Image (spheres, rainbow, N blue to C red):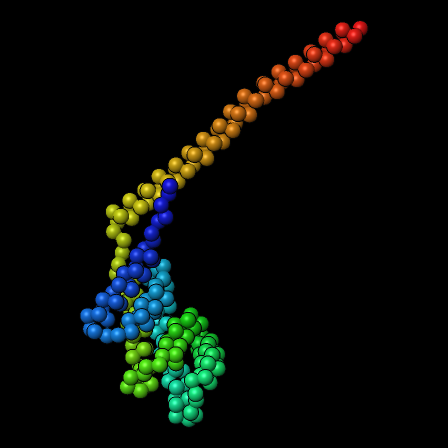
Length: 217
């Protein structure tokens, strides 16, 4: 059985989540889930992609936080909105959020901005007021993005391990090729062996027919 290869993106994503959990535990800070989610979303295959999308996602985090503050201000200070009405208002904020990301040419930031926005609006516990709560969520998400960027840049597969994986992959490819060629060789031999048998059967049939004709005559 050929085991699935665990890629570096898999390893880096796992390490990023671990570092987020460890950091938040060391500083006794809650809500590490926002940093972990951001780290998973931000991790890309290459450093260049991570840097480009990392900047985009930081902007998306800020946009999501600003829209979250705006919506909370409207429903808390301008209009007194019940919890039942929030079911209809929160999705409307998503429309505004996506349109803003499109207008500023940051489509890649839509997902993370929506995560930040929803984490702000759906939470029932906003200690210190909605402004401070929003700032904390933006900071938590930004920490996850930064950790993912640093891991993707500085965590590199050891050369010896890379050579081992490449050699193992080449060996697997050679085994598969040998198996396929072996099956084709067997099929070819089967065709060559069956051909004389078919000819012999046809010859025997013709001889029997001729013998029957001679007996009748």
